[in-house]
Length: 290
DNA sequence: GTCCAGGCCAGAC
DNA sequence: GTCTGGCCTGGA
Image (cartoon, rainbow, N blue to C red; front, side, top):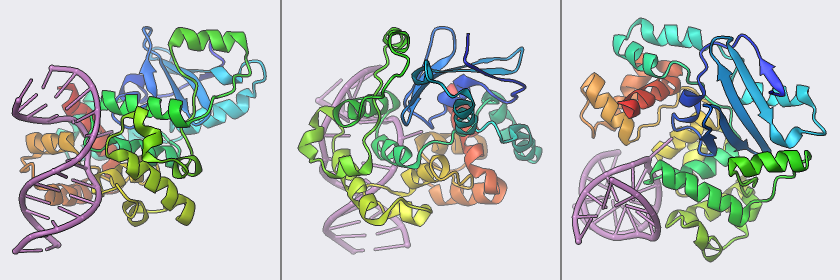
C-alpha cells in the first residue's frame, strides 16, 4: 500500500522518465516501480496506467510523516504540474519525425532535480557510460556523502535492505572543496575528480550558477554538459544537449552530418524553440530504444 | 589487444 | 575561432 496516491496523471511512464538519461540514482524494481534518492529523500514510485495513478512511497518519512509536504515535493520533482499532452501536440504538429520519436517515449517528464546534484552528476557523465556514471555517483555518496536518517526505524531499514539501496546523500560543494583528488581515489572518477573539487570551490566562491554562461564557466563543463545542467538543473527547456546519441538520431531522422553540431543546435532552436530540451529527450529515448 | 562511452582542456594554427 | 591529441576507467 502506498503512502501517497496521485490521481488522474496522464503522460507518465516511470520507465521513460527514469531511463531517458536525466538521472542516475534510480533503479527499476521487479514490479516495474522505481526506487531512488533525491537529496535527502528516498522513495519508491510506481504507476498504474489503467487507473492513471502515481503511487509514491517515501521511505524516510514513515513514523513521523508529513504526507502533504511529501506529496508536494514529489509532485514538483516529477513535474506533474506541467501539461505534457499540450507539449507533445505542439512538437508533433509540424514534424512527423518528432511524432514518431514521441510515440516511443510518450511518458517522459523532465524531473525537477536539485541544481548542485545535477552539476556534479553531469560533470561525472562526460566521456563516460551510464552504468559507470551510476557507479561513480554511488561511490561518491559512500566516500563523501552523509547517511540519510530514517525515521521509520526497522521497517524502513528493512525495506532498504531488500532494495539493496545505500541511503547516502551526495556531498555538498563545501565538502567537495575540502577534499583532495587522493581522497576521491576509490570513487574512480579518473580525470573528472579534479573537476568536481574545482566545481565545489568555484561554487563556494561565486554561488550557484543562474544561466548557461555561468554554468559553462565552471571548470570541466563544456557545451554539452552545460546544456544538460541547463535543462535538468535550471529547468531551461530551450537547452538542447547534443551528445553522441543525439548526433546519431539527428543523422538518422534529419540527415545531419554527425559533426555538424552547430547545424543541429540551430535546427533545434528554429524547429523546437522553447521546447528543444523536451524534444531532445524524446529523440534520445527513441534512438536508444532502437 | 583495440575501441568506445551522454566531452573537455590545452595548445597549435 | 577552429581543430587536434590526450585523458581516467571499465566493459565489449
